[in-house]
Image 1 (tube, rainbow, N blue to C red):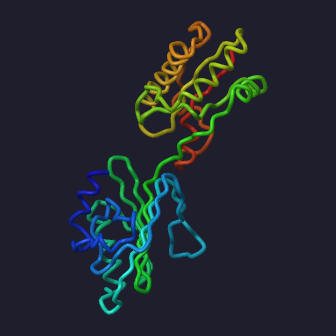
Image 2 (image 1 turned 180 degrees about the vertical axis):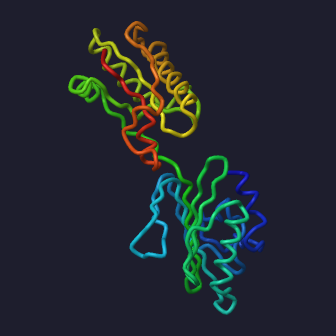
Image 3 (image 1 turned 90 degrees about the horizontal axis):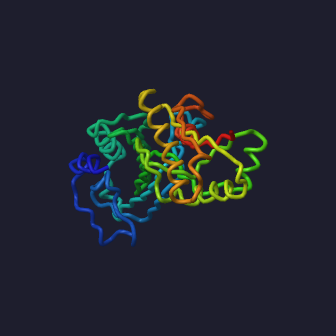
Length: 274
């Protein structure tokens, strides 16, 4: 995100931030480090994973986007110094365009929104102008991280009834196959399942979304399946002969790859009973 911050530094109106008058705990978003003159921050909110429905010209239609959500409410003390709605919206339009983004929708004198994509990261922005106020909403688009993990009993039930179970609590960095430390709860439940049933043998199958080439995803999913096997063997005492790693890349999706929600569901590890 540092590149984007640098691109925005010279944009909007380069006036001092008057941070001393801002609401405690609030500050400008790194993408918009400057603001319109005379405004202070009256309120703010940040959610590590939230949802905002971006406006369209048709009031009944919205564009929902999920990810890290930031809301900042600016207010101006003296309305006689308030810039025109045109000036406010043009500033944000130009900032979006100058960063290589695209203005998506606008309603004259009221709001504008757009999308910027840099280094694979989508950032959605909406600026709304009111009487003496500017409301800024930013979503850094991403899929939700799964924290709730099915326990050993639930996994065993799915294996018995369907022969396979999807595990969403095993995490990897993008394009990496190393199992992240916060995968421990899910790995522990798999370990419990296998220790409770000593005769159980499993195929550990890595799945990806469709981002990138098929060949790369096939290799990545295979490496991830094998990495999970190694973690279960080395960290949870499961015999290597009871596990085998595989990868099918994006070839067995459970949801559409056209949405972030669908991609998140497709990025998974499945256990398949032998």
